Image (cartoon, rainbow, N blue to C red):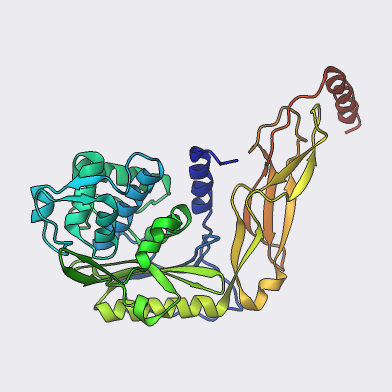
Length: 387
């Protein structure tokens, strides 16, 4: 059965927000020190932050902004409000926009799918404005949509004023927020995420390469975006997948195109060398059966609403264990699917809880018949008397 759209969004929101602080483990060597203003390394599956240097510092994101522009458009495609084949009429404002361009012309009618490539591959400011106007009627209104999505994803240090990243007062983000956004893009929309790996795009006879140099240097890198302005410096958000483990690296404020690629590669080397990504329980997997009172069934299947996963230091990863802590009050029917039943915990070798998530009902349990309810009421009464 297909999961309702709003439940998909809820599950993703939970998984994106469940991001613990950067790991602190004596078995780990110190992370690399980069020549940049701020940087973050994140495990994609769990959301664990592996390296965090000034990750919540608010900085101009330049064209990294277009990650949100493309993400909002992709969500609208998922919702069926627009189609990839829809034609967008290019306005004079879009055509006149300076900076990097797709090189569209006033009055051209261009498919949404082509404009997305113009944004993602060519970093086109003109394409970004065209999409913003098509979806919201104007760039200001579209920026409000971007900020709504930022709020949903828990991007606490982000505010968008435009769809391009053009320098503007009050337009800022952070390395940690960009990592969260990149993770949402990877998880929510794998179909369009594939565009971020495209090395070039030709429009109007003009072939432009993707500015992410790591796409050529490292075959495990498959996206996401670069940015540059004089104020922001050279920035990059990139993702790499090796042996089933995906990491997301964000670097703000390097001094050249080559430097942002080199510094980002250092983060990937550190993460893949010293961390293992482990999924302990998959979303929807039965973790435990929990007894139910007054129900049509005696038990309910319990699990997690999103993958329960962590990126653990390789040298000590075998010391971590999971445990189930049930709620003090045993569940009484009716029970709705998704109802909390306790929590799942990840415990280190010294007994410290390093991560936790709700244990929820994976199915609904209706009320039992009259006699079942009466009998269980009597049993509960005497259990209460006996403590």
